Image 1 (tube, one colour):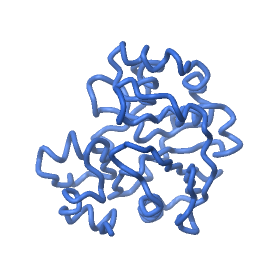
Image 2 (cartoon, one colour):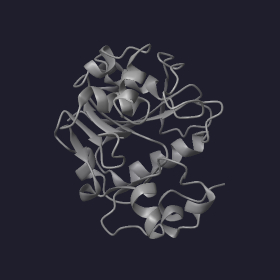
Image 3 (cartoon, one colour):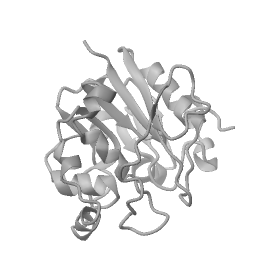
Image 4 (cartoon, helix red, strand yellow):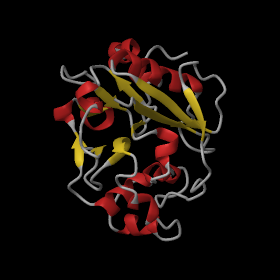
Length: 239
């Protein structure tokens, strides 16, 4: 069986609240290796490979859609360049099957039931009532939803999704374009949002958790999450 490619992204975005580093990539790579036993590639698509661990395969990140602004205004995440992952040409770069994961993620349990799903496309849901999906994690047979890339118009698509009430940059377009009904992960699969599910309860880790996503204002390396023993145990201690 062809190994799954695990993909993360690192690029510098001046003015954004979080600046991701090689240490964050290396932490994610360690967590994946610890909790996913099947053979896999770990790839970082990046504009700067300095400091990446030897087991991280660095690939140059394209500039397509890099300058498309967020419809939510300056300082908000603008991740439209990730949409190219939906193109058919990614098969040559990433292989026939890949999963994309945000760097602000803490992995705490077995990833097999999440990564080994058979559907052609699976994406995280259940975080924001304004959108069907969250772009923090998606699994795909390469090219399975190629229209997400092919039908995106940088001049009109961001505002079209925004006016339809879909929240975010790339995830807003994905939600608008695909609509409801795609296969998703949720709390029933052990995938939790720190902001939505854990923080209101004091940050306690649910017993069935496999992954905790830190989308929003908190990062695993930030002061508040670092007070939690399970964050320090699984993600590591921030330098």
